[in-house]
Image (cartoon, rainbow, N blue to C red; front, side, top):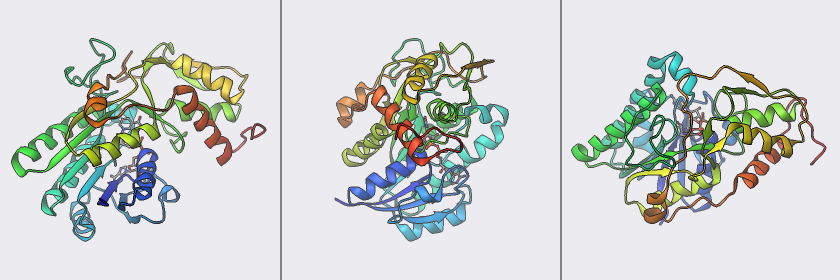
Length: 318
Ligand SMILES: NC(=O)c1ccc[n+]([C@@H]2O[C@H](COP(=O)([O-])OP(=O)(O)OC[C@H]3O[C@@H](n4cnc5c(N)ncnc54)[C@H](O)[C@@H]3O)[C@@H](O)[C@H]2O)c1
């Protein structure tokens, strides 16, 4: 059944892929985005676009009243862990107060279900076991992770008190085409951009820190399944495999044919040493499993950046 869906952050990396897929499936889609990191050209022209900051509660309420979404996909966020550590208040402004303004608009205008882009990578701290399941204690090491935990708590409260149903998808490290290569997050896109332009990428720390890298298309499918199966709850969305940053750099070196140096810098605060997410709950309840291998996902990402053309990039392999 086609639905009316509002995607906050729909001009961003994950949100824009989601918008495209939802339209492909026949849904009616509207986007709210302030374009702080997102790009207007990533938004499929078939989606209605509202250039708006989610913290503007009254204006957001008007948009939700006009669009009358049955489901809100809440992806808008300040996404830099480093920035959140430097300025927790600014992070909370968007990630807590902005989210609250989204929830209020949902409550006031009859939204049935909210799907929230949460985090697994920044929620569990340094986990006691890897891969780490949803029942693991929530012990964020950054204001960014603390804000995601706070919004999950608000969502549970909104269900109890106001009857708003919800799903939180706790993503691992998402990577793929359109991820901003000039931001502070997204090691794959940053390294790809550097290597394609013959600049030495910098690994912060030893490079032996391990992450769970999940391809953006797989994350989009998790959202689609959450929407279609609609049972609510909290789900890890990851591959269960921990991959070191050094290995990512090595694989990207091969794919981009980069022969230069790799630099090392000091470890960054707020980052965990090793994490991977166990996603059995998503498999059993949503029928979700990652389908794109790391090698394939990296190849698609490099192909995207090559095709798009970066200033000074090598294009000979096209
Ligand atoms: N990329 C990952 O590895 C990852 C991992 C876990 C969770 N997440 C979550 O997934 C969501 C999408 O992340 P992404 O990687 O696509 O990042 P992104 O920066 O590309 O997308 C965020 C989008 O939100 C918009 N935005 C930011 N502040 C806003 C505001 N105040 N009002 C309206 N729009 C605003 C940005 O312009 C951007 O389009 C975020 O909630 C993020 O926390 C991402």
